[in-house]
Amino acid sequence: MLKEERHKIILREINLHNKVLSTDLSEKLAVSEDTIRRDLNELAEQGMVLKVHGGAMSVTFHYPFNGQSQVYALEAKQVIADKAIGLFKKDMLILVEGGTTIMEIAKKIPADLEATFLTVSPQVALTLAEHDNIDVITIGGRLAKNANIHTGASVINELAGIKPDLCILGTNGFSLKEGLTDSDWEVVQVMKAMLRCAKKAAVVSIAEKFNTVQKIKICDAEAIDYLITELPTDSAFLEAYKANGKPVIL
Image (cartoon, rainbow, N blue to C red; front, side):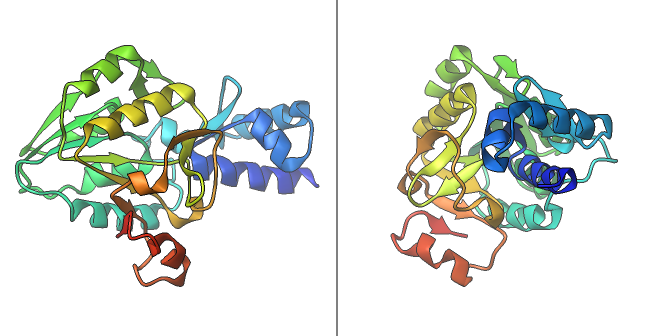
């Protein structure tokens, strides 16, 4: 495989999943980790990715307020945001994670919505704070720089003491067989705690991430109440996901 082809695949994987490990790229592309490291170094020098320990992450994911960074599949994520907002009701307690799709939700919240939002993401908290009629509560802990959310025992303990009406999670992998998955152990523990404490849970994901699997399982597909994607609900692609009746496809 030519270097240019590898770079295209690497960029797609990083934009799709926000962050990737060198070992996973090496396995996917059937090349050595040294080759992947050289590829990532070149892409980082061009400003196209951000090198992190063990791999790389999307520049937009790490710097969401940089107007020069293009959000991957932005139009699709804006469609998802509009659908997710349809679940919000007056005086709700809503718990949200982080990531570019949830950032789009935070931007699009109607000005007249009165609700309380809790988040483990400092970036999402800052965006939510721009809305006058909502209260914003951050759940703090150690900042996981590879995911830009707070993690650790203090976060999990705080989550155990609340009962939000709705929890909204992003995803790095979702399939009917393996459910919701991620590659970061600390992030997975926080997402599990978010699911445990919420009355209802929604996963937001562009359809391109469906049928992809990361290394660590968060929950079965049936543990999710709503699966929100940019596709119309009558899309043939979604038929298999509607077979069990849960999650409800929006």
